Length: 149
View 1 (cartoon, rainbow, N blue to C red):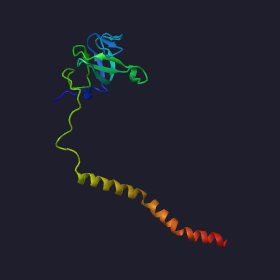
View 2: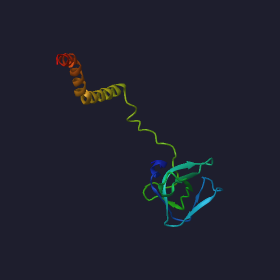
View 3: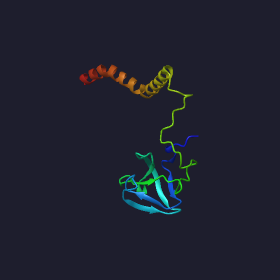
């Protein structure tokens, strides 16, 4: 079974050894924090793959998206994501392919969905349409009654 990166998004990342947090996804950038065994680093917001193919986790302090994120290198010996039953190695950063057994909708399915949506809309607005037609039909009669007064 493939190990897709999307399974890790919105999951808590824990340190199981000493872990450094960086300002940028580059080990030569500024170290902005250090975490130790048992520390929760944060919730994984996204990921970044550098030019060398290394995976970095993107984390916002306290999930505050108005702040600058920090980056944690995906060191499988120093990190844990208990909410995911997949290992932190051999992670596929490509989206999984759609299920070929389903495939795209056929023309007939598209037409049926369109007609179904039309009938729902028509049923919802039909009383308003009928009311408008009746009002337009009665408008000359109402105007004549107002003139006689």
